[in-house]
Amino acid sequence: MTARTDLLRNAIERIAAVVDGFKIEAVGDRIIMTPQSSVQSLTIFDVRDSALAAGIRRDRVFSDVQFEFPGEPQRCPDVSIVEDDAMDPFTYEDLLAAIEIVSSKNDKNDYAIKVRQYAHFGVPVYLTIDPFLGQCTLLTTPRDDTYSSRELYKYGDTIPLRLPDGRSVDIPTDSFKRRS
Image (cartoon, rainbow, N blue to C red; front, side, top):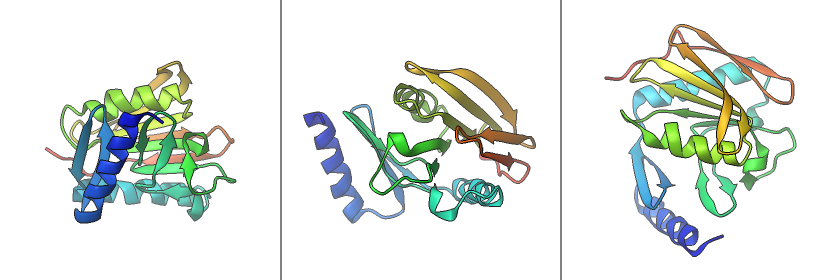
């Protein structure tokens, strides 16, 4: 763990102790505080409900739970699906899928920074849900600092989320809300 990562982690912990209602993450050298919108919250529930309906155990589907990435900022995906034998505290190795709901227009965090980090550490499935564009990007097959497979879905489509352990989750997007 680098000194910079330790400083960012300590700053985030101090902020989180006094500020409620925000997702707080390190992005590069910055600390980003994002209020969760009702659209984001409802989308998280819809995705979790789809995972549960597909038979993924409740104790394997999380929202805003921390994952360690050695030497890099920890991440708290909006929704995560973990291995059956994963135990808290979680690391990147436990992640079967990371799902992020874009919280602002022109979001470089979800579309660039997290893509690089998740791919670099081999997170098998990364799904970005964008309520501003009304579309979803499914990234699979991590290779180096990117993903070699990219599929786009529009709101109204059903996303076939295929997990590396053989399970699959169909995520209908017809109830996803849009943001302007």
